[in-house]
Amino acid sequence: MQIAINFKNEEIAQKVLWMLEHFQKDGVEIIEIENTPQEILNNFQEGLHEVNLIKNKQLKSRSIEEFLCEL
Image 1 (tube, rainbow, N blue to C red):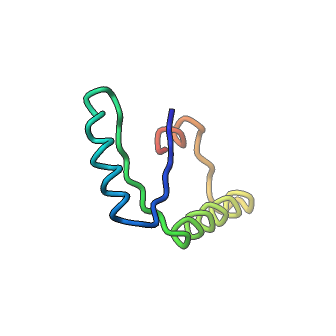
Image 2: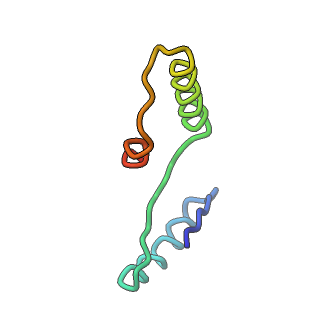
């Protein structure tokens, strides 16, 4: 199971992170993701541009295996 939590208060985030770190030996994996809305939009636009290039035969599409390995 995965849970994403967005903290608006850095102090609360640090307290929760400290608590979760105590569960790492039980298999809890902590991954910090800091994507700004602009980064998300840029990634989406880049992907859309690539799809358009493939559609116009200016770029060769990749196999699904290659795509999944990249993820």
